[in-house]
Length: 363
Image 1 (cartoon, rainbow, N blue to C red):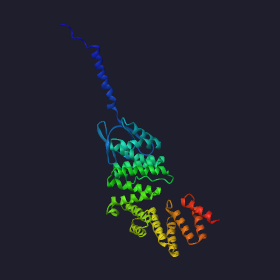
Image 2: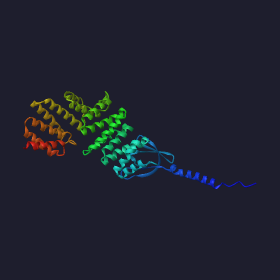
Image 3: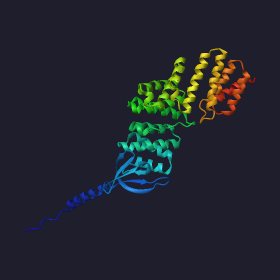
Image 4: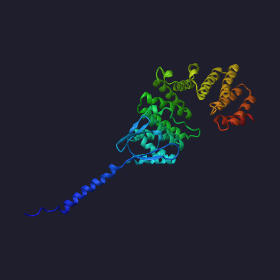
């Protein structure tokens, strides 16, 4: 009997290829996620895990097949197997490179297939973008977080800094409007509309603010004051300003009086007093006594809020009082008001106008 033939070279090569193929697949099987856990500065303790999901405020993962959980606030950095964009964002965030971090989080927050990854990216995008001075990108993070979990977005609304560029406000408004136009739930639309209203007011876009206020009123429904009194106060102020712009003076006054108990924040209180003062001025016509009453109404804003954070509406109120004194043929009193305005609030828009009037009255 002849011996069985040994495997040919070809068959041996095929066998080696199969083995190498299996070996080549091992790195994918062996790849693990990494988290750094700690508090304060530094990255903390490094741990290899297999991340499963996020439940509430905790990251859920497996370590050697055993379930583990850590509060997300304590996780300084996450590295996901095969997720270069997310990992670069996390690395940049940990090192304080806010601009790079925000740029990398943007795409992840918008498009990643896993909800928990999008949420992590959106939350950190808000922080990184604010620190990088990119209000528009922070708004994108807030939009995405609101779409994922409206409750998690409460209190995370970005605040436009005083020196924000007009282009960033325009981009932020566009981002919010697109999301609203694509269709969102009432729970999602309320915070998005509230932020859009603030941006329209900051841009001086009365038409956009008016449309947003009307949409907010519809979304909030009949029990708006009981459901969300702070937001309802904003809606009342917006509707009152809209009524003023349309010449509906009694309606503007009615709306402010309706919300008196709701205006708790200094800015809201100042805005409400400004609406009443503007209404008084428009109703005064050329009646000297009523014009003086309007001037007193404006001076309430100055008196009550000149020491408030940001001195809300104070420069505008002083400018209005000066204008009324000019209308009453009291140029010396008007000049004193303009000088005070220029001295106290030199960088404000009313101060620029006041200086122009001083130059004219001085001739």
